[in-house]
Length: 475
Ligand code: BG6
Image 1 (cartoon, rainbow, N blue to C red):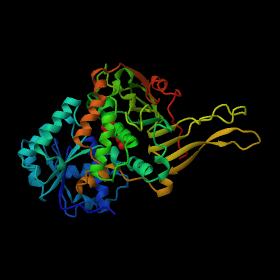
Image 2 (image 1 turned 90 degrees about the vertical axis):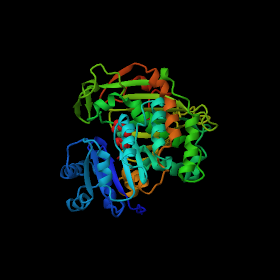
Image 3 (image 1 turned 135 degrees about the horizontal axis):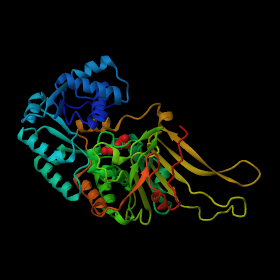
Image 4 (image 1 turned 90 degrees about the horizontal axis):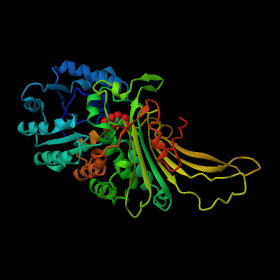
């Protein structure tokens, strides 16, 4: 049961953008259906658009119809739409108009805008006296590199006290990502072997079939390193590698995650593989190459794929490589963490037909086919000893009948009830930039890969067994 938030309004700055349409408006609609929004609440869309309330309501309707995880119910949407208001920001003094549109003494203001627009908007909020009573939610990427992130943090924190700032990384709101913590710390079995004594290496993939959609111009200045590695991937690494927190509270989580971030060795740019998709076929559809996407330079060197090896220098993880990779226009959407265990100390079946005993591995499927599986060896039925790899599988859909709620619903609700546990602290943001800064400063050349593949071959060659563990789920 979700805690009902206190009386406050919700403002989405950047309400006409991609994020608002795909994630925020559908999340607000679903929270409304669950009765998890404040009872009295105006949802104010603000954007540089010459829209009025009706056009915003029509936009929200389309967004819910296209992207909501629950299907659009017209009568429910009409009730939801009663909460909607729109403020055009094209005119000077747009933030004063936002303040005038807010009825409640408190509000959540969500900045769904590009990083370059954040500082000016924060100053406008201050000028419009929209600091007191505001919970400020900021989208990643937080800054453009270490120096700009520091400047951005200083600017925001000069205006807003830390406890009013919520830096969102929606991966932390994913059920499957949180389940990593329950899997590790809610079971006595796995934690005992979750260390360098038993684990050979860790593989983390955030794979997308999508291209850059309508965001070519934005993505050009960002690339996969800033878009996914600096935030989503490193956050997942920190949850896989962290020590048990004393409790599931914002403070304990911060201490343990921060320790991992401090212990990460900065990525070595000479060992990072950067790729860029060319034309190809994905999901049965012919798609253009990255350089042909609108808003992208014909000679662009922005990476749409990146793979590298990360080391976490702690007692628990010394010598265990964390292989990380992400890419757009890959063969399919597939994000997973694979924990690969060490070999058995001795092959007692030598001299039989068994030449090799395969490594055990645990796969945490973040999306799709959310679930966890354990791969181990079994004897193939028959008179001789032969080994076959088999899996034990937990599937969210089978166990909990349905797909998990969207990350943005969880995180928006957490911000509405002032729970910071799943938001990113300043020090972690800055440390994460330190880890990737070398790659920003000395990028290796981009290697082309065809859309619909798994990225450049070089990324397989860097793996101990020459490939990534990607067995498909049965679902
Ligand atoms: C966003 C990136 O943070 O995450 C997008 O900016 C990416 O480029 C998206 O597509 C992926 O999120 P998810 O939840 O679909 O894995």
